[in-house]
Length: 140
Image (cartoon, rainbow, N blue to C red; front, side, top):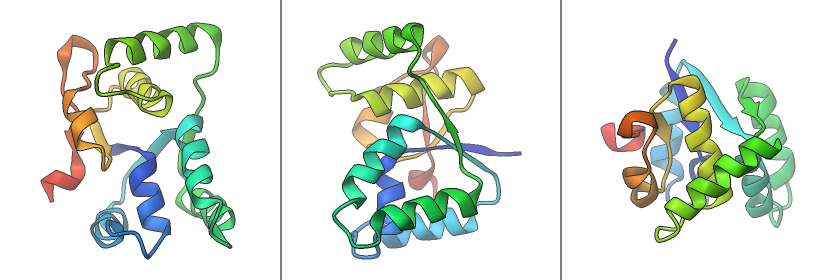
């Protein structure tokens, strides 16, 4: 089964119909039949940006439940250390904590396909053995 990492940008764009990236993200997500995975940090970031909308948090919670989105947590001390190391390595882009957790999740699961709007960051970030991420929005 195909697995995609899901970043906060497309998640927000999908749930907010007024977002300029809504249509391409919706087309991408609605045609996808594989497994979607993300991290708690990504969900926190999305919830933060969707909170001002009247039904934003409810819409996010409903999407997570309906999509069977798998959420992984990276808050243990060793994981925080790895995330901090990645953030230091890519400080010039910059890499935030949510990005770092997606890199860690991709490495853990052996997944390079990511649904993201952060082409600059994920075009540079690397998985183990210098493997590049595949930006699925750019392949459509």
